Image 1 (cartoon, helix red, strand yellow):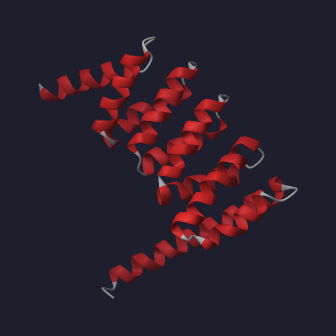
Image 2 (tube, helix red, strand yellow):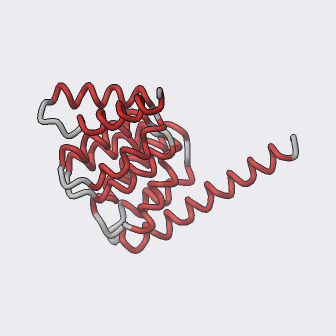
Image 3 (tube, rainbow, N blue to C red):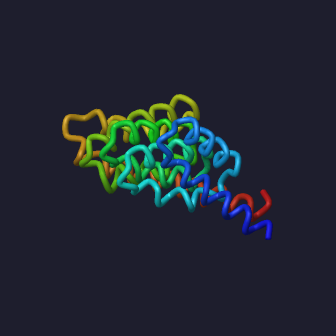
Amino acid sequence: MLKAVVTLSLEGLVEDLASQNPVIRHEARRKLTVMGRPVIGRLRPLLKSPSEQVRWEAAKTMADIGGPDSANALAETLSDSSRDVRWVATEGLIASHSDALEPMLHELITRSSLVWVREAGIRVLDAAIREEHNHFLRPVMKALKDRAPIFGVPIAAYEALVTIQRNRLRLDSHHATGA
């Protein structure tokens, strides 16, 4: 019974993100944010809504929730037709810190032809370099600022992604051996 009430509540809050009343939208976003990561799966389809306002609300909620699943969805949103939705997604990725690196690099590998994705990449990676000392991202930044970024960015982003994955494997094997 409780699960049914929570589900109804979740569905009602998701529907409220499309309300014409900004107070109702804000309250729905606040409550969904409190619910946290379990609502990400329900918000993700809203990022493809024909309504710019609904896409913005979903992106903003996911940005406020954070975490790897939000970062993945927000990175995919960087190609949205709305500047405002892209801005909220970029801000969410910056706030996601290291959770944003792999999804951002993936977008740079697959969608570097889109100036919007490259611009977001500059902002997200610049924050990651400054805040977390991820110096291996510097070649990606250099490629993003180059005269012909659509050629160099995918290669540099791929190399950075491989570095992240190698570091993770090294860390995992280190923990597995108990060292």
